[in-house]
Length: 167
Figure (tube, rainbow, N blue to C red):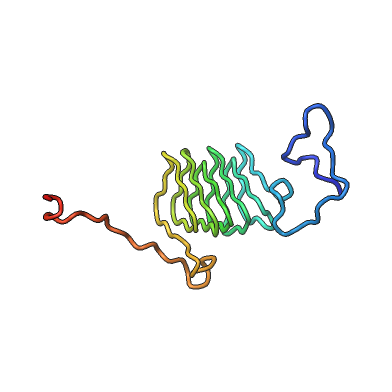
């Protein structure tokens, strides 16, 4: 079966796309263009269950009880309400509920995370917002299900003693 006509990579300028003579064998970690992708477009609202989507792109509104996917991307103006578990998430819109990112969570400048977020790696751009509970996953806790996520202990800054600051 050939490549979908809706592939996200455009054909090169000046001619049709060329295919290699021996296409690579498929492996579980497929390239983003080959992943089963669900795009909820701007102005569209979806409510219910999503199954078998590897990549979820939210430009409109999604309300779901539990979604498992490889990648979640919420565009500016997009809203996700509910619970989602993914490998990696990029939030430029709003997520309200519970997000578990077993890999990385990126909150863009326009992004808002409301509720509970769990992740192994966190990046928040200037202006990005997290309101609620933040939990960091560690190697000891695996994917957050067995043993649950552990919270990172709060570390107080070291302040010099009064005798050290006078020296």
